[in-house]
Length: 161
Image (cartoon, rainbow, N blue to C red):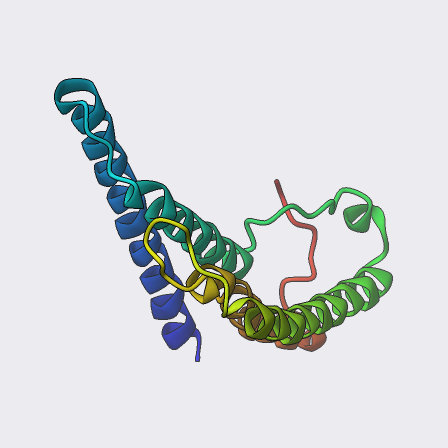
């Protein structure tokens, strides 16, 4: 399971890297086009928005997997191991519940926004809004092994920052 999730997290980061390159390239194209040819590509802003949203959501999901998100553990590390394990387990369960709820509400949001389109490309805004439930679902999946290892008593020792 860990190898599959490692590969998935790496894939997410690779896709995010490609999205960053696309954002950079089309914005450079827009800058040169406007500066030297007095011509603007209207679609650049719409595509940039879609790419930025997906870049952020995919990167955040990978960050959840690698435990690189913000977590104030300095108080937790001062507690006895048994209490630390209880709190860590509770935090993991709450995080999974949050991501599941975010996925559910994200799907509802996508359903209500699918009729909206970006002005210059007429692409459905479904493409940008769908990044939220994808992020939430991936994050919930990525939290499950952490919860299991916390329950087993692994990785509950003091963490160094």
